[in-house]
Amino acid sequence: MEHIIYPIGRMATKDHFTEEELALNISEIESLPNRLNEAFAALKPESLTHSYREGGWNLKQIVHHLADSHMNAYIRFKLALTEENPTIKPYDENLWAAHADANSNNILPSLAIIGGMHIRWAEMLRTTPLQQFDRTFFHPEKNRSVNLKEHTYMYAWHGSHHLGQMKYILGR
Image (cartoon, rainbow, N blue to C red; front, top):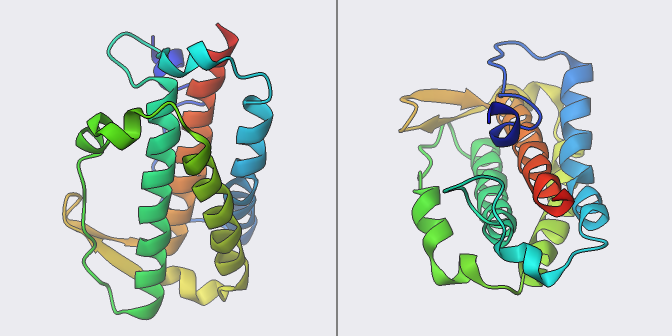
């Protein structure tokens, strides 16, 4: 079951990131919309209600979650660039995934959000000076500050993690 829940493995805890690792993480974020489009090339509408595991989110919830989560991640990154260690607003992703808009069969708006927002996010990431990635935001649920290198790594992993779940669903 572990390989289904975490198709690319659990996210490793890291304290240090090289410039090469940061560049790879930025590329992962930048390429997510294209990787999603490739995965959905042969989407069957009935797949939208399939889940990767019993009790797990279905395909449409994962797509809508990616849009929600990555919008929040983009905003958190920008807040950290423009404010001194701002406290971010956590949210309950399970409650968001249970909401009606996260259960819509129309995933095109969420794919469009991901596509457009990732273009802007990648532009912001690529033009942010390296030393600015040491800036932080405070995450109240983690009770610690998170620097932008770690944040970039988390969301590079996050997109690939959920894409792996979606590929599992689509391959069944």
